[in-house]
Image 1 (cartoon, protein in one colour):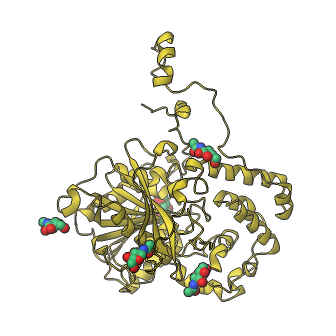
Image 2 (cartoon, helix red, strand yellow; image 1 turned 180 degrees about the vertical axis):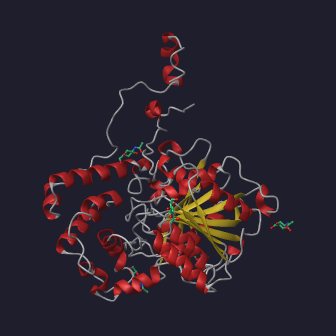
Image 3 (tube, helix red, strand yellow; image 1 turned 90 degrees about the horizontal axis):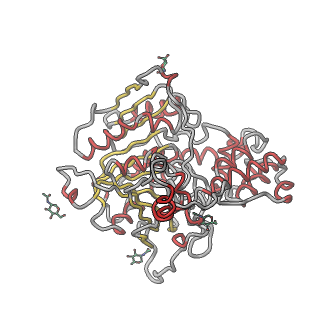
Length: 490
Ligand SMILES: *[C@@H]1O[C@H](CO)[C@@H](O)[C@H](O)[C@H]1NC(C)=O
Ligand SMILES: *[C@@H]1O[C@H](CO)[C@@H](O)[C@H](O)[C@H]1NC(C)=O
Ligand SMILES: *[C@@H]1O[C@H](CO)[C@@H](O)[C@H](O)[C@H]1NC(C)=O
Ligand SMILES: *[C@@H]1O[C@H](CO)[C@@H](O)[C@H](O)[C@H]1NC(C)=O
Ligand SMILES: *[C@@H]1O[C@H](CO)[C@@H](O)[C@H](O)[C@H]1NC(C)=O
């Protein structure tokens, strides 16, 4: 408010609407008004308190969606299929929104946003549509040796962590692109173009024939296909704007996907027809999920369970969930609930059958195909992991790294253990490290140490002095009527 005090009131009044925003009475509500019906509450055996909480977290989630999100925003409407003759191919652009109207987003000033729709494949190879964003830098970084660097921006393929499970949960629809300054904003402000795929099932959940597209959560290889198909489509959607050189980077579910990209590119399968991934420079996997069943059964049985029959057609959810779990899962799905709603509905209730993974063969089979690690991969790979991560336990990542190193000691894998950091905050603590690592790859520098290496990072000041978890939510301020929130505005 430094501007306001010295300005005479009369002048203020005359220029107010033009220059100083809008003086309408401001709302203090969510941009969404879900409340659960009596039927919902009875069917899912909710207390009034939980019912209220589920509504609050869901209204909060929905309020983070620009233009009402995938169910209302025209961008997510699937174009008619023009291929009546040729077979559908993955990695094809279906729609390009060259300039996304960012008035509904909370991205940093002087970044620009595009979105596109592309084809990818589900676990069983079915071609389905999906969506993605590109966040553009104001000035691309230039790397001398890169042939295309004068015209194209260096590309980071950003694979996001769990944003949700249903069509509302598309980072490309979220005002802060889901990770905000934890990665995509930071990368764009550092001069990279950030290609951010929404995984299949997030954004668009109905294919051309009307069939449901399940989000096959946490299957690293499926996410890796989405990522690489999105990148291939992005190159065609924005010709000359994205370098063929790219680094893949992701966090959590997406850390597993970034690792999965490294594994996919080590396979000699004929999956990616035009084989344009020669510009791959390496992958950064931050807090990667390497052990899908490693945490909270109440979460995982629901998160994995809802897409399981799209992978194993004979699977039924009641193998894993109790009748109460089934009822709550149904409610959760019907409101397209996210992680917050899942916490309210599942964590403090008997929703999961005991030893659910052992109820049938599906659990073990899923685990085998879902987890990255212990497989051949194309290096270099940087793995960053905090010791105080409650979602992705440190020990699990450590043993996945050690086993992978044991199998492929000649591959470049750099494991950085960060003492005292949690799940997402590890990204913040290590920002200078990963920015430097990405820069080095584009500059063609050799890795710090070849083969497998482990190093440690500790906080500079005593750890107890640091804020462990960020406390604020990015709300949107771009709409002029919310300009009072933009305290660092024009
Ligand atoms: C608020 O939500 C409504 C209804 O979902 C939507 O149409 C509108 O675009 C949203 N407003 C903003 C600023 O995103
Ligand atoms: C449609 O078919 C043509 C020819 O087979 C192919 O090049 C193109 O990629 C296909 N489009 C889609 C969306 O699969
Ligand atoms: C740069 O790329 C262009 C087009 O791909 C190619 O014709 C040219 O030989 C390349 N130049 C160098 C120095 O590699
Ligand atoms: C693949 O999965 C989809 C969706 O579950 C299903 O409709 C389709 O029949 C499956 N195709 C094959 C070849 O298994
Ligand atoms: C983290 O730092 C503390 C204090 O220096 C030390 O006791 C602990 O062993 C460290 N943990 C790891 C996993 O390095």
